[in-house]
Image (cartoon, rainbow, N blue to C red; front, side):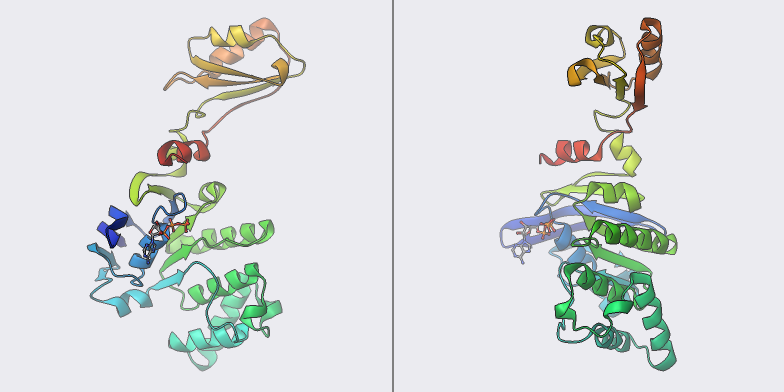
Length: 305
Ligand SMILES: Nc1ncnc2c1ncn2[C@@H]1O[C@H](COP(=O)(O)OP(=O)(O)OP(=O)(O)O)[C@@H](O)[C@H]1O
């Protein structure tokens, strides 16, 4: 388990992370969300022991990061921002070097290398110096070194940064597969990534936690939660009738009456009332769906971005 209590980091008089407390359990993928400068990377560096804390504590698998850093690093894989170091080494030499540092030799080292090269898809670039790789491949090499010792905990700072859409999808799938028996914390700017891979999301702004819940719980805080989006086969003059429904708080008319977005009163579920009105009026519907809520809306609301 990861236990973070009252974590604070000051740089001079500036407070980058302020009194952050949370826990992560096996099987959880926690998404760290926040605008630029919110304190995500600083928090991750403190979790991994790369940056000393100003106050508060981090315990990982029962070990305190400050007092027992080697025990913590054994259990942890950390993918920092940016590219791997040692750019002059080939991918294979770099990964072999990391494997040896992690204590692997001979057949066991070869087996671990084969496994991560396959997991991350590096077969085609093994002989290439790291600095000559594309940004996406550099990111994959970083992920491979994170995975080499099969850590129980993975801390990944923007793992899909620089990848193309297919690669993003593959890395998300890889994280989802790995997550079954690991604890994973990822930071991301990409809100769809949170719905795709995270079992829980924490939003931080100006170094403070402003929300913590499952993606569905966060989406439910959006004004779009339970909103109804309806598209008619022909334009319909329906705005006044929709607005008169008790469950509806606001009507957005789009495309000159061809489609509408209907916002619910707080806590209301207006689907049945809307459907009944449509049937009663005989309006011909092309598509109609209920929105789950929008993470980007919640994100903006909570972070002011
Ligand atoms: N070594 C440092 N010295 C002084 N200020 C720092 C230092 N490292 C980070 N900061 C500041 O702390 C704040 C948080 O930075 P951090 O990199 O953690 O944000 P972030 O949420 O990861 O942002 P991004 O999404 O842009 O990577 C920023 O205002 C940053 O300028």
